[in-house]
Length: 469
Image (cartoon, rainbow, N blue to C red; front, side, top):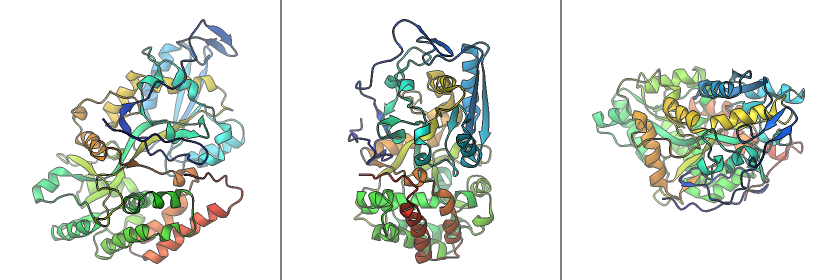
């Protein structure tokens, strides 16, 4: 069992989420008791009861917009069908989107947002801009699931922290995500290769890959910042909490910290050696990923654990996908090699101005049932925040088994950060990362570009900054 240090979440510590992936620890009994007990009462729109805790009206429509990324939207459609069965005459409409901010911010401004949103993807809406327009979802956690168990008792420990802002549970992150560098264990075994634990070992592996007619890494234009994620992971492991806090709090010169620079230099050496497949800045990201998973032109790819499901139709037979944590720069790194970036992801929100707030919460409650959560784990090969639903064989997924192995090995050394999503910075950061990975800029240019983006957010008085401690 993991012993995860408790972290207090407030406006100074929002999105730290360092314990979000405490996968083996159930939530304690300190959460509020179920607010839906007692006799049924009548509320505007519908009757409140243990089986209808939010008073969803009869014959109503639920409007959901779901980010169509690595997990697709069919898992929400699965829950929607359950809702429609349980609420005869009601309809749950599930729409997909890859442009959440572009498509939904106008609806927030117009006062007609959807009832449930998966605020995810490269163009997710910055939480700092909509916090006061979102429902507190604590009543969802306090409610019973469809099987009659209190939802709070069914969740892994710490998973609510990434969506908690100043005591308000504004988002429920549905998927437990492990960030790693992914590879084919069968390909590695066939060639006698070993996953690298340091950047120096990665450089050596790049030479072996080149000798075999392959690249070490590959990238796609919309996902170039996956390498920023890898760089931040490695820098935090190298330099410790000082690095994480500097980035989280948008400090001047944060991208110039020695730990960050050492990772950038290691990446640049790999790119300069020709171990990064060129042309990624002009390649759609799933096509680039297929060059890795299907064509096996590259050995490694950094991503969240959604990668297996995202590429399930474009993965070579017998690939045996597994992952390992981000490499460290030196043997004297502040955190061990096993330290892991993991958190609860896919943040679901319920806008207060939605036409059917109760329906949005009811669909989310349905998603947190054992039925719907098991369906997700089995079909997406990734765990949800609902505990105890993944068997030891990972439903036949080597990647899912690998996630459990990495979490076990990491123990207490699990970390994450939130500044990129909090301030909606990813879109701007894609530009310098595409240029850098293509070999068209150096470390100094990348650093300056990232610092400019960071400084712009920090110096913008209209942006609500949240200090992290």
